[in-house]
Length: 141
Image 1 (tube, helix red, strand yellow):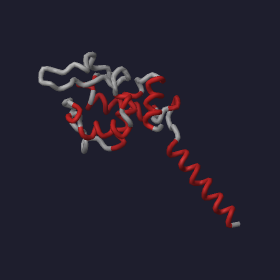
Image 2 (cartoon, rainbow, N blue to C red):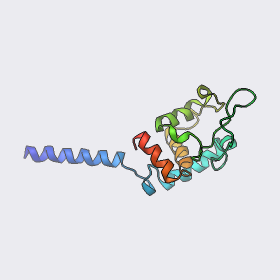
Image 3 (cartoon, helix red, strand yellow):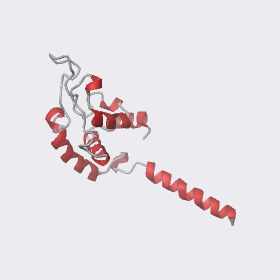
Image 4 (tube, rainbow, N blue to C red):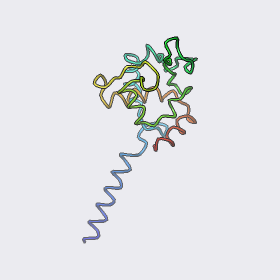
């Protein structure tokens, strides 16, 4: 009986781990369509003025501006955002881009954790499968 209880507990924990860590979204991605829709609104209100409504700005993102800072990179998969692990994307949203040579303001206290995730899901929705899969592999998803 004791073995049955222990085995049951192990199975329950394993299932819980799987469901918490499994890809919960559509097309094998971590996010859902609902998160992308929420993220679209958040992105439009907070990010689009610099990164573009479809996360497509700026073409020459590697060239410094006259003041020595970098322009906002595109987040649609055509720049380097996919190189950054999930936690780094969150920290850039929270703390801004100054430590990376940019001017992005921090959104800590403006967006909550779920809103930050929703914003990431929105711009990642533009990433093709090859870019997303490379990011997911690097990020442990």
